[in-house]
Image (cartoon, rainbow, N blue to C red):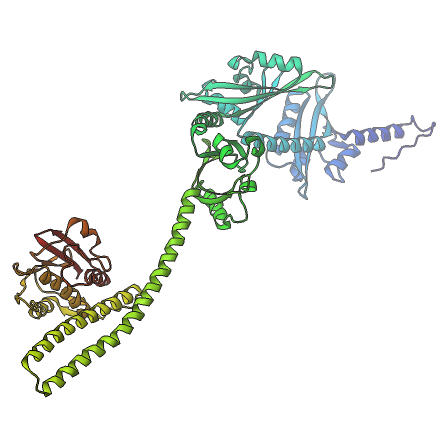
Length: 637
């Protein structure tokens, strides 16, 4: 459209110039007009209507509805209703409409329709004024979006937020503030709304809990006021709310609005109370007690912390203890273990090497626990630490002593093995030499007295070399067992036959030639054993039973089966073992104090115990002086 205005003096007041001026005003004000004369059905649009509707031709309102898709759905119904009411009632009416352009754009307008009548009131036509409100509606929509966003954010805040006028009346309350009132029974069930009606239900902020003094203080001093408020909820629980009231000033510096903010600090107050109680106890304990915030910055330490570690509380408050307690020899793995355990479970128990202020190493055993509020928010870490330096040093000394002992035992074993091997050759030589002498003497004629003398001492030499050979074999067995070089060669055997054969071949070797009183009191089973090693164990125990019960009834050997194991018992009625000696019977080279009159090495029972252990079993011993001994072998089947 042509909106150029001729402003020369001669033409400015002409009709055409006036029309152009009206068009300019319409464009600037975003206003258009139309006239519909019923007599000749003539339609007249102002130029701005063509711009607004983006149409080159003029249409009546009814045709605009029927011939275009600008008014859709409810908007078309609303426009028809407006036209009908103006036409029927002959009154001026207005309404706001939304139109949809073909390309999807939305436009808004406010339309007022006037009835045109003659002097008798007959309706001659309609006159409409259209105001383009698209920009305003867009701004309103944008504002509503921003408001909805802010509303969404404020309602999700865990803390209370309210806006008040300077009389304390609610202008706004977020969901947390409303929920707080519900919890305290001040407000009945409430649907969130900012309408005056709903806000009036919230009452006056100043009336609650006698807050008049707070508002007066804020209004008078125009500064934020902070206070704690105790309330009792509908469950009968006491709650503590930390509140802040902020004044918002207008351009004249007067308080226009008040902003109220409240945070439930009940859990924190409870935690503080518990920490105070704990602090009283902690101050009286000898152990270190330390409290940190969620970032592991120290907030409190007890007196023992200062005494043991040498740091004053004011030196380390607000510092991570790792920054000054850990040193060059602190285990990095221990540091990682602490961090991972706290992250996973909120607790840690274990030891760590730290350093005092003077640089001295100190071993501490830590017990750390996280403290959470009712909502699961981390409040603090509490660490209780005990000085275990003396224990650790003792462990280190013990470890060193154990290492030295292992080295000594290894050396001893190597020496014994070497010595035993070296003794075996001379002993074998002695035995062979005596046998050669015996053969030689039998081939020559010597008197009977010399032959008797020789036979006597030859028997002594035979007995002693046999004993020495057995001793060396026992020593070698001990060495092989300690070094783990003894291998079991197990066979599956009927156990009753094995025991029957053993008893048959093990009567008393000399003296009274007694035989074992043998009882196999269970059914036979196939058992996996190293028959040579087990036979040696039984021979050693039975030999002792014969040796230490001379002149007494023959020893007994009983076999029972219970709990999936054979129990082999060898009982004699001999001299017995004193109570003071019994704890040491299975130690190397130990012999009971009343048995030293008889030959022996003190190795048999110790070797027997080790060999039975290789079979997964054990040996038990009981005795009473003068009443004999009872040795029981537990052998898993």
